[in-house]
Length: 102
Image 1: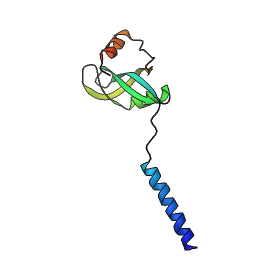
Image 2: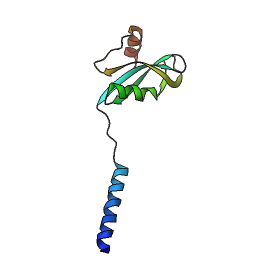
Image 3: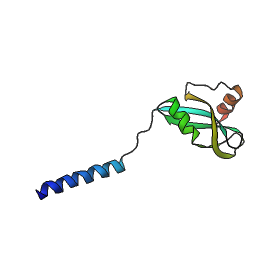
Image 4: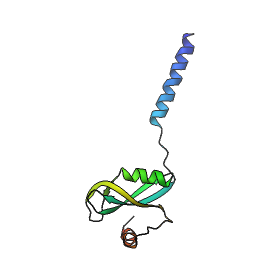
């Protein structure tokens, strides 16, 4: 009986260790979000997510280097697009993004 209990305990230990060392899955889709930083200046946040809604949620919690190179938390999301196909509706922001070394 003891050996069965020991085997079960070992199995639980192996499963717990495997879960602790597991590599999290990275979403396949890439998004870029035009955001308004707390600095009052717009910026770009790149996000990997499964859906557009998830990308917006992740971007909302980001810290961004805005267009004036200041760093600050994201205050609001203006627009998110899927990359590489998507383009921003704001032409001036689209030009800014195209000039970035990404």
